Amino acid sequence: MHEKRAMLSRRGAVAILAAAGVLSSARAQEIGRETAREKTQEKTSALLRTLHARAASAAPGGRGNPLRYEGSAPGPVLRVRQREELRVRLVNELAEATTVHWHGLRLPNAMDGVAHLTQPPVEAGESFDYRFRPPDAGTFSYHAHSAEQADAGLYGALLVEEREAVDADRDVVLVLGLPDAGERSQLPVLNGVVQPDILVQPGERLRLRMINAAAARGLSLKLEGHAAWVMALDGQPVEPFLARESRVGLAPGSRVDLFVDATASAGAVAPIRSGMRDDTTIARLVYQG
Ligand SMILES: [Cu+2]
Image (cartoon, rainbow, N blue to C red; front, side, top):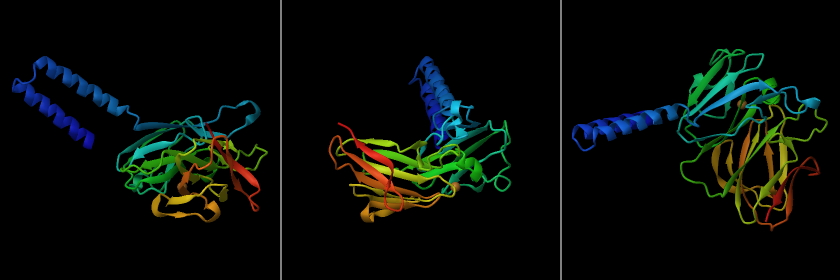
């Protein structure tokens, strides 16, 4: 709405200036062409994201998640500013129906992605456009509204950026998913990887956005050697508080945002542990420099 109104008023202004002889008609035409170009760009802008839901091509060895958005599990990180419109075209290239559910967001019911309830299922070969303006900033996720499809790889992070900058140098997104059934390891999969390394620079402040995208698996973890300041829970800002012993629990579907100051020095490695005795390393902070 806003863009359209700005566009119309600009065109109106150009016409008025041209009529008043302030702008040569050639210049007015040129601006008209620019405006038309902006309009096409607007239609194909980065804000219109496409999510192709596909089965993974039968990879040698059959590893990895069987279903993917845009060829990866998790799918691409979607970002939108608070109250700006998110536009996503789901293209269903699966052999079965699917829908996208936007987890934890306030949105119009018709966009909620629940097949047979808020929309007809998006059948194989069909597509559907989701568009809405998230009223709240924070860390959210999206996933197929079928636990089987979501756990098979149709999930990803959705970040709604605050309108005022947050006091962190960098976002690090960690999305927990389920290991592929064929995978021997039962370690949690973070960003599609078992035991990923998170590269950090000494002195920087991270905003660690942790998302549990697994439909039925909880995770508790402990960040070794670093203070973990909880600054948002499930997409809602909180008055920052220090997590005791830097332990954080993530129920299925939940999100925790942490401020983590990289206080160790170059070359340091800090494990993120899980398990009953903190005996399993699920990821590591690896210092650069
Ligand atoms: Cu959900």
